[in-house]
Length: 197
Ligand SMILES: [Mn+2]
Image (tube, rainbow, N blue to C red; front, side, top):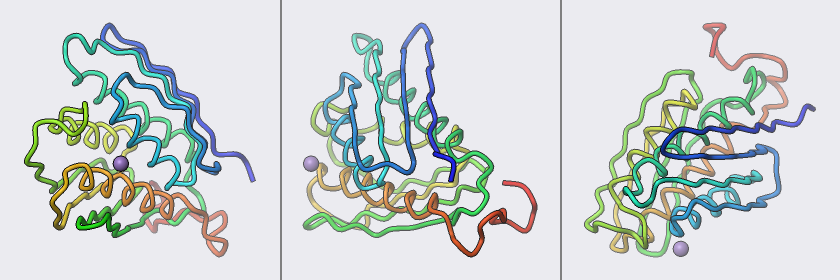
């Protein structure tokens, strides 16, 4: 089996990001974005997703976090798309329901080639840790568009905003892990009757 690894480098006037993503990893990470809470989320995303991720982002955080958070989402989605290659033999879709103490997070993903995000996760706080809460939607929107994935995320209930975001990232990782996993019976088949994903 060919290793499903992608290296992505993206440089603009606002951010410079290097990423190496291995879909068939061992939960090993080395993540640095300059936003500690985002690092925390990407680290547990990597571990729960059974991937390996090395990511270094240097952005214009003196402006605000928007460019960095959005571009990290873009780069991760691009890395996923590249690592998946022709998508033959994968499950393609997946979902996970993840509790975190009093909070329940739900994620569903279809690696359909059709970018679309639906996010229903109202947070009552302006920041979670050092991360501006409103940027979470920008992150997932960027990921869905560059991965060309249909991604639905929902926080069903809960009190703690830290738990809510964490439950979402864990559910996202595990839904993605299933979607990317290979189905032994499908082998070289494309998981679509359309003939294109
Ligand atoms: Mn935590």
